[in-house]
Image (cartoon, rainbow, N blue to C red; front, side, top):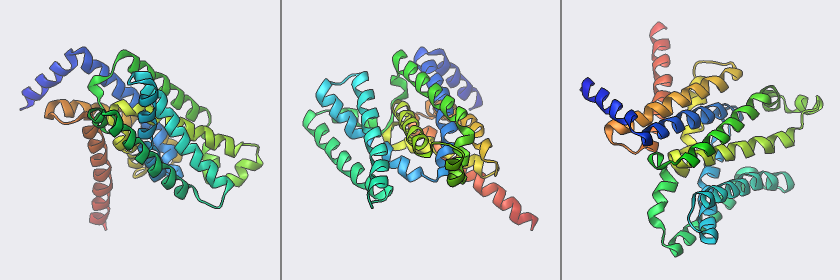
Length: 282
């Protein structure tokens, strides 16, 4: 069995399409894992999950207006993510409605509209790819887009890491020392949305939240140092995404599902094993 697994891995890495997918896993996994520290520390996983589902209506509307192409899908996803994510944040700041309520309204209305458009256009066969990803279908242009977004996301969070931590734990002090809390919040949510879009091809709208939360959440089980969640989450995200892709090739599983399932399994193991060891010592 070991020989067959090694042979399968060698066959996988010999194909240019698999090499491209593995490189995408490395970049997207690291960027998502790095940003997952912000998501975990801000305790906004469910909000980000709602935004990830909200990408679909933007894709459907862009396809209806401009046709089905790589750029129409990208622009539609970005527009929908910004509308749902930043729109809900704006509504919560300028009304009595909290952000979770605003997200629920914008997301469900938009998602329903997206499904109506998809049914009218007759493109249901593309729905699975948008919802659950299609790593093996990534082109060179998709790879460059993933590289650009991943690099931007990591650079922004690295540059503002101290300000982010201060804003998350001591928002009043952050504001008093001159940190533009509102502007930084909008910027970070924009970066998260762009990262979600870059993950669309890899794991799809539905599963992207797992890749964007599980890495840092796993590191948080072993470390109370908030600054370690960023690099640790990035490394775990990259390793988990690449390992999940290889596992999917060997077991003939959907790549996106294998990646998120593997990261979720690692999180559960990280939670269960230390707990049992602690109980046995006491």
